[in-house]
Structures are given as C-alpha cells and as structure tokens.
Length: 157
Ligand SMILES: Nc1ncnc2c1ncn2[C@@H]1O[C@H](COP(=O)(O)OP(=O)(O)OP(=O)(O)O)[C@@H](O)[C@H]1O
Ligand SMILES: [Mg+2]
Image 1 (cartoon, rainbow, N blue to C red):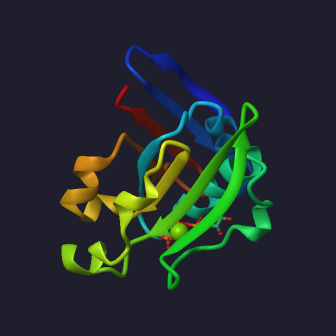
Image 2 (image 1 turned 90 degrees about the vertical axis):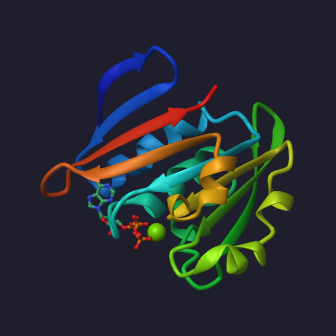
Image 3 (image 1 turned 30 degrees about the vertical axis):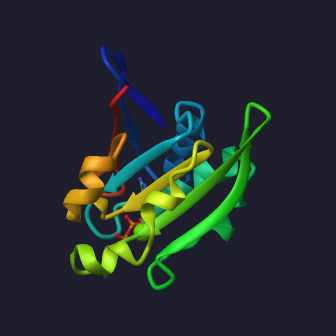
C-alpha cells in the first residue's frame, strides 16, 4: 500500500493498492477517517474491489471479520454492529446494482438507516439521483493495470 498523495486541501485522500489484501488494509485505515453519520457511494467497475474495501472498514470497527463480509448482491443490505472511539457504530453495506428505478430503491428505506451512529456504504449508489443528493462523500476505485487499484476518497466536510 502506498499513500499516493498527502491528504489534499478539502477532504480528498488517495491510495494505490497492489492486491486485495492491500485494499483491505486501506479500508482499515479509512475507518478512522469516517466519522458517523456518513452515507458514502462506493463507485467502481464490477470486480474492482468495493466489497473488498468494506472488509477492511468492518474489521477496523470490530464489526466483522474480513471473511464475514460478503457482497450484499441479493440481500441488498448487510448490517454490522461496530464501535469507533468507544462509541457504537452501525455499519450498513448495500449493493444497489440490481435495483431499477427510485421506486424500487424506496423499499430499502435508506433514510431510516442514516441515524447519527450510522456508516452507510452503498455500492453502485451513483446510479440513483436521490442517493447522489444524500451522499456525504464518495469512494472511487479504479483499475490501474493488473491488480493495481487507485482509491480516491472524497468527503464533503
Ligand atoms: N488491488 C486490489 N484491490 C481490491 N481487490 C483486488 C485487488 N487486486 C485483486 N483484487 C481482487 O479483485 C476482486 C474484487 O472483488 P470485489 O467483490 O471486492 O469487487 P466489487 O467492486 O465489490 O465488485 P461488484 O461490483 O461485482 O460488487 C477480489 O477477488 C479481489 O481479491
Ligand atoms: Mg461488491
């Protein structure tokens, strides 16, 4: 894992990873930056490592072991109980790839999930205007050749 650039003005953090394990390690590091409540879009092509990154975030929050975090492809939402600085954190991991239209999205009740202690991570959230509007930031993962990935975290505040 290399930290490609020091945290820039505003709240942009960039990382480059060379393996899945490396991306999990970045996830662990990111957990420290994510103060609840947050609703973050996880953006990136199929198989770039969005779910892999969540494994690290869940681990750092003592919410789940890496191998317990699996893709919420069909269940849509996975919920884990964790803690950050001794305070409880509810980690919600969503994948809205298969949802079509705002009507289907409404059945998820995203607004109810975003309580003051919540960290809501939504794979493919950029598909929906309502999610783009509510998002407090974005984590974008892109391929950088072979197993290399560039991870860019943008937090609004
Ligand atoms: N640098 C890397 N970072 C993350 N994953 C990597 C990396 N190199 C290889 N991989 C592998 O790529 C795969 C990423 O799968 P993952 O399920 O995390 O992707 P995803 O972005 O969530 O895909 P989907 O859109 O289908 O949900 C894993 O098998 C992982 O081991
Ligand atoms: Mg995934």
